[in-house]
Image (tube, rainbow, N blue to C red; front, side):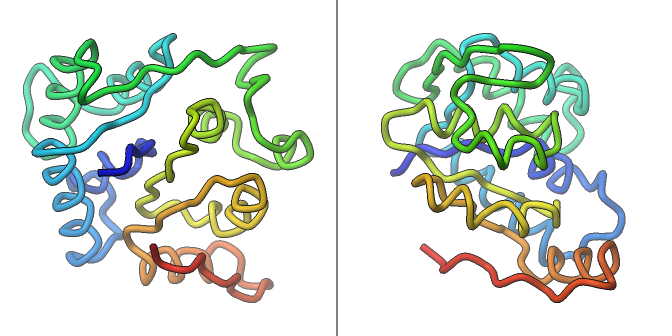
Length: 179
C-alpha cells in the first residue's frame, strides 16, 4: 500500500469537528483512517510538527472520535518503521522549508499547511497528500502535481461546495484525476 501524508482536517472531519461537511464526507474520512490503521504507512516529519498539530486539534488521551483514535494509534506506532515513516525536513523560518517543492507556490500556501507538502516532497516516493475538506488545496494541487506530488481529495463534493462559497467570484478549478 502506498504511503500517505494526511492533512489534519482529515482527522477533524472524521471526529465530526467540521459541522458543515456532509455525512458522506465524514464517512470517507473515517473509512480512510480506519483502513490506514489496518494496513499501510503514514509519513510524518522527524521533528513531529505534524504530530504536534494533530495533538493540538484532537484528544488522543480521551479518544471520542476516529480522528482522536487515529492519532493515538499513530503515537503508539511512530517508531514502527513498517507503519510510520519519519522524514527530515529543514525549517528555514516560521513554516518555511527547504523541502517545499515550489518556492513560488510556497508564498501563496497557507503557512501551517506547508509542512505537509514539504514532507511529501522529502519522501523518496513523493506520497500523495490526503485532503478532507480544505478547499484552498484546489488552487494548489496543479503546481504540486507538476513537482510529482498528488493530492487526493477524500470529499470532492464538499470541497467544491466550500470553494464556491469561499471564492464566489472564481470558477471552480478542476480536480486532479482519481488514482
